[in-house]
Length: 105
Image (cartoon, rainbow, N blue to C red; front, top):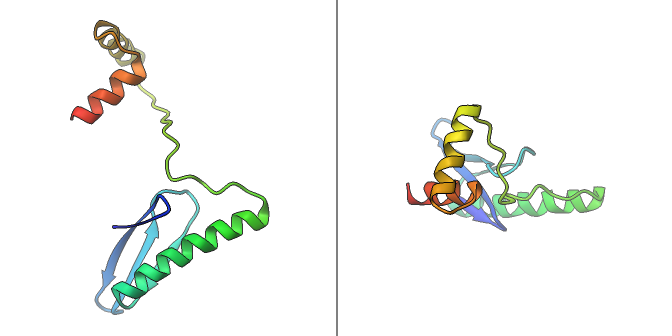
């Protein structure tokens, strides 16, 4: 997995086309890369991110940030109640309890 300016890219190899190709994972915008060597795919990834950031600047738009630290989570009311009770018993907020639980798993 490649990383650049907080963005990640999963790369696969197509043995028929003899080509590496991938897509940036951290945005809903479609940002793709390709190359015939590791050096080419790394350069393509960096160039694609820079092009995306330039495009957003030119349009006066904020680029999607890879991760904001906010997560919207939907669950049943019963599970929400259980989580709230567990968080309360541990002396933590629901957010802190979920974060700690996920980090320890």
